[in-house]
Image (cartoon, rainbow, N blue to C red):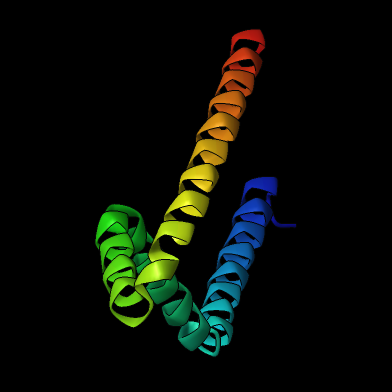
Length: 105
């Protein structure tokens, strides 16, 4: 009759082998998703670049608008200023709300 320790060791060895097989299968299955993950990574990198270089984008857009239709630039500038003010207002409110929630936690 095998000892309890031997049966536990056998069970452990079987579980370790099963775990190894499952990990290998998971890696194999996830390889099919690699292109989607690479695409998502590129989108995240692009979003980060846009966040870091927002002023460049706005400047290029302003130049394009000024060259194509200069009269629109003033209208767009007014709208952009309004949107910026709304963004700042909501951002401040959300940050205040999050700070209050963190203090309570």
